[in-house]
Image 1 (cartoon, rainbow, N blue to C red):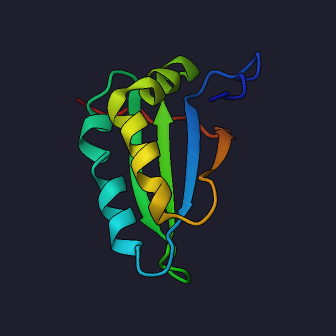
Image 2: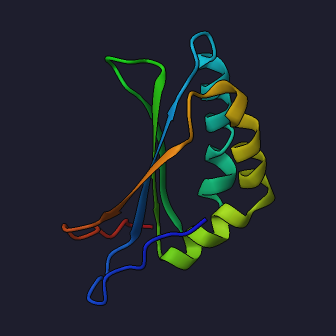
Length: 114
């Protein structure tokens, strides 16, 4: 899987959107598979944010928002066995390929008090 390189002047996190459209009747299966990613992904070094959304107008459309410290951290995440299992396991439940979009953050990332 190829990811676009950050721009030379980019200092923000590496952000990725994933889109999956469930086949009719498979919406709960898709949600279950995606939600199983939450705990292990959030525990990964370099993972800053991971959120799962459903479109209000089309409940079969799932949007995953994930933010990593760097492109290398996202690449490491995708190589994880549980991520590879997810990519394989979700295929029978979705229409077409999983769509991806990569974002450049224009605002600043607030510091979280820890």
